[in-house]
Structures are given as C-alpha cells and as structure tokens.
Image 1 (cartoon, rainbow, N blue to C red):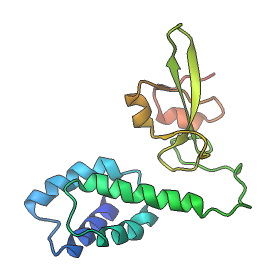
Image 2 (cartoon, one colour; image 1 turned 45 degrees about the horizontal axis):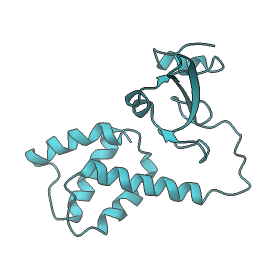
Image 3 (cartoon, one colour; image 1 turned 120 degrees about the horizontal axis):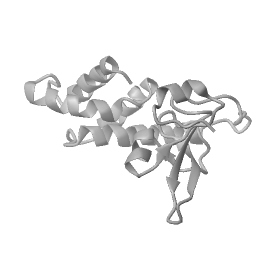
Image 4 (cartoon, rainbow, N blue to C red; image 1 turned 135 degrees about the vertical axis):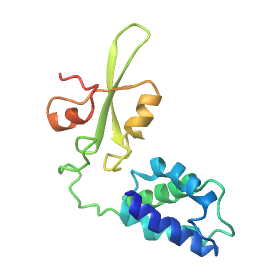
Length: 163
C-alpha cells in the first residue's frame, strides 16, 4: 500500500469515528504508521476498513490495528485458496523467489546454515515455513542469502552472496 492509498484508508477510518484524520496531532501518528503498512496489499483496504467498523473507538495504536486486520485478511485469503491451484507456479514479489526469502545464521560451532522463510512481504510462501519480512529477519540476527538463480533479487539486497 503506497502513501496515497494509506492516506485514503486513514481518512476513512477516522470518518467512522467522526474524526478528522488530518488534524496536526493525527498527522504525526499517520507518519509513524507509514513504515508499518508499506507491505500491505491495497486490495485489503476494504476488509481493513470493515474491521474498524467493529471497534467501539479509534485504537490508540493504529499501526498495530491495521497490521492485525491485514494479518486476518491474509489468513482468510490463504484459507480460501482453491485446492486445485498450482502451488508451484512462479509467484512472489521483488523481495523473494517464488514466495521464499533465504537467510543464514552462524551456529555456535561456526557453521553457517541457510534457512528458507515464507515471504512476509507478499505472503505467497507455503504455510509450513515461518513467514517473515527481510527487516524482521535482519532484526532476528539473520543475513539475507538469496540464491544465484535470481540475480534481480540480489541487486535489491546489497548483502546478497551468490552461491
């Protein structure tokens, strides 16, 4: 979701509670939410807005409330996937390969192990792998290690090492 799309959602959420989302004190909150919602799919906007209609008052932590609603939307999208859908077709976003991000961590014995993670940006990975964004992996101590088969992804990530 880009800034303009989120601004529209922001205004609509505030309108539900009879508030102006563009007041000076609300603009600071809007700006603090931008990083948290940049990965949200724009098509989830209507669902997120409906979730806010269920609230009695505007949440204090808007970024978390929007993220929680988006997570619920994504889980319902995965649950509604057709069982005949080909799960091995090319999918994903510019930050992953077929819905997976590969990251490594050095063990106590000094060996480096590479692990696959479901892409937390697009959510297209298999449910059996933990789903994380690149930022979450970095904060958890992993180093992004994308395979050679996707040089366009390595151009995005400066810490890529080609195998």
